[in-house]
Length: 270
Image (cartoon, rainbow, N blue to C red; front, top):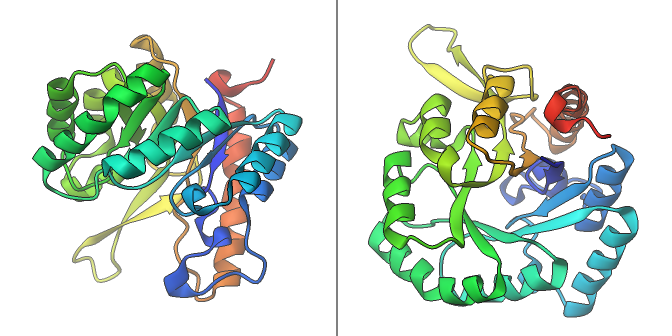
């Protein structure tokens, strides 16, 4: 398993438009440099850096810089519109990504199934997969039915460890249901705390290894099922009152997380 970072490792550093932009936003080129500096060999660029809007020569430059740094690239988008998926298939081929990570942007699973089925023949011919992320609009059981109904070797899961809380699926359920279909892993740790007046809870992010996610058990479960997906660290640092303070916390969590994850046998470089 390769360990890497993605554009949702540094969401605040890249920019969350509703909160304002950092003074010096992190770019896709910066992600390559950051990965190389921390002995990470993988960068995943998702929908918060929309590569389909880039000029082709800039994507070629990104690939050259990644190759020079010894960093593999993975690409991602949002939605299942066939035209978008086919556009990202071409980008995946350009950048050497083995799959396109995406997510269903509608609760209408019949439509999602129809759209994926329209795009998948081209993916199958290219030997590239669609990794559909569990993102909270659907339960894991619904996603399993989708994978089984479509039945394509080029469709699998980008397993995110936290997203499905909003569908009332805890990480243990997510891992049990989706590991058989996993093509990519998003490691996102979390904490659940009771509100100070004791009437309710909040789910917040945490640095990897510092929250409630049992990461060694997660990795063991995946390994025991014969899966070896690449793993991307993702972070959910809460807003700190200013973008710059939140960016600072994001960097602190990143460093803590990388130290922890690189201590695990699955991610130790030889």
